[in-house]
Image (spheres, rainbow, N blue to C red):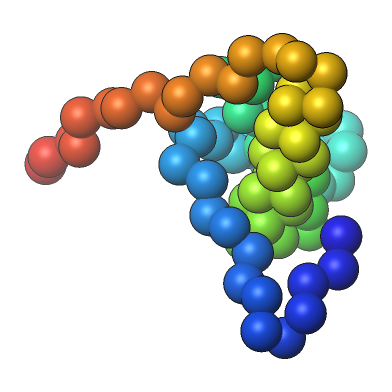
Length: 80
């Protein structure tokens, strides 16, 4: 996906599960609220950026096919 200099990519508020996969030699990201939405990257930051694009594509596909798009689930902030 290409963005013009003037257009910023959206940041979606869906929960992301990020982990290192030794098998894939990459960081993987799962978006549990969007079935099948996963991404990867060489760094956690790259994997999360790729996941944002996957989320955008998932939502676009759902809208184009008349499917429901779940709202991001609100999670309470953890305090330590």
